[in-house]
Length: 245
Ligand SMILES: *Cc1c(COP(=O)(O)O)cnc(C)c1O
Image (tube, rainbow, N blue to C red; front, side, top):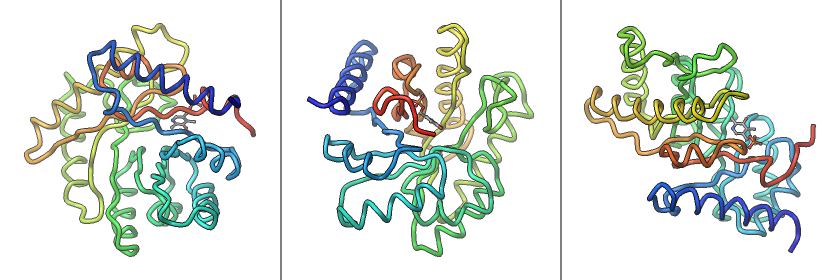
């Protein structure tokens, strides 16, 4: 077997093991294969091994790769394209046109533009709200580092959630978070657990809201994320190796 197939199968096995260990059904966990910086040929090779969920962090790159892949495989290829990176407002149109799911909504201005532009393409875009639970300055996302105790943070999160729910061309499906780097495993675990708890709290605090999905976990921490309830893990290096730049 070639390297890509071997690595993919190893990641699938690790997901299965982590899910079983947590008493969860592995079928409820979506592996998003992060192809950012890799050429479209790599995506095609990954498709051949069976991958169907691809993650890109830059809308320009998505806007080039997706049409290329569709010119080869057709539009009815079964691929779901996940845009996982922070979006600048001048790039929302590319996202509205090419993304099937957006994982990193971190500003209300972006939400309004995305909804309007998704409408132009007659689409309804599933959205994860990105939350910054660790409090690290370098992380994007809505402030949630003290959501359990801070009424202001709670109010802002509720208001944002309500605003997205009211947007006709967005469908709020869950929360996304990034764990801090270079910290002990228990701190990573705490960030994922608190994100899951925040989703649960929001469901009780905002009427009519369900947040079935949690996008959390990358190459270095996806097993911890699965133990804490992740439904979408975004894995690049473990599948494709260290990145081209
Ligand atoms: C690159 C990236 C990933 C994947 O990271 P790996 O460490 O390569 O698994 C996941 N999420 C986001 C938002 C990324 O930008």
